[in-house]
Image 1: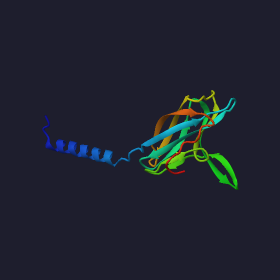
Image 2: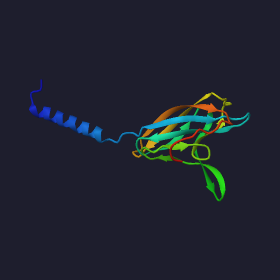
Image 3: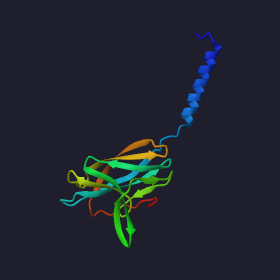
Image 4: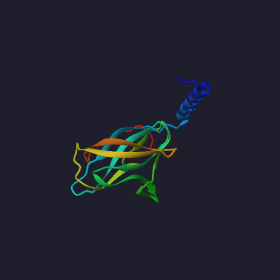
Length: 161
């Protein structure tokens, strides 16, 4: 039993302050991943791309990717440079709230390099994507991307990029 009325007031004030603090804390951006897939390879090939559509609920950025099937996994961009199509690693891929960003052949994609094993049609490739919100907090999303044959048509995507 609480004999001192002030301590009840202090507890109530503390509870209110904690509740407001939690409500005011920025929520970590949730990111949905749709239609993930990995391009199949030919014998001896040591690199391929992973493609998907990313949609964030709040502004965030894809800052890293990893997969046990590759020693090196990077975020890449293909873009015209001096009249030539060039591919390069990028440190991050910004995602605007509510706007789908399509990772596709000829654009942004996740590059899987120094493959540890052959990837066959129908295999499932685990990929861990790391996102960073504007507040600096990180979130990981686990993806299982099926391998599609090298000659399979690129599926249509809705969104940007």
